[in-house]
Amino acid sequence: TDAGVRKAAVKSDTVLTYDDNTRFELKKVITDFFTVTGERSGTLTSREGTHNVRLGVMEARGNVVVVTTDGRRLETQQLKYDPSRNEIYSDSAFVMTEGNKTVSGIGFISDPDMNSFRILKGAKSTGQEVTIPKR
Image (cartoon, rainbow, N blue to C red; front, side, top):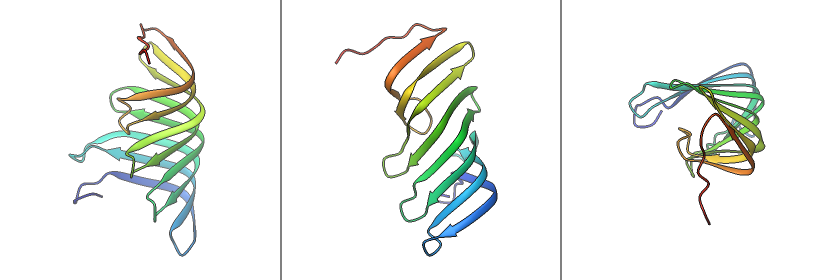
C-alpha cells in the first residue's frame, strides 16, 4: 500500500524467505496491480519470482504474462520492477499485443502502466504504423 491505497496484491503457492525475512522467493506467482485510486489495472502471472523488501525490487521469471484491464498483453521470460526508478524492464525477448497490433523485440524499459515503452533491440511491429524517433 501507499498512503492507504493498495498498489499490488501478490499471491503464490510457495514462499521461501531468506536474508532475515527481506528476500522472498515465490513459486506460481499471481500479482494484481492497482491504480492510484485503488482500481485494478492489470494482472501478472509467472512461474516464479523474487521480492527484495529492502530495495522494493520485484522480479518475475518464467512464462511471465501481464494483462492490463484496457486489453494489452505482454509476454516475456523475465520482468523486473524498480520502484525507485518507477520502471518495469527486461533484457529478454518479449511480445506485446493490443487488439490486432503486435510489438516485439529484445529488452525494453517502460513505466509501470506501459504507456512510455522503449525497445532496446530488434524492434518489430505488425498491424499498426510506427514512427521511429530520430536521434
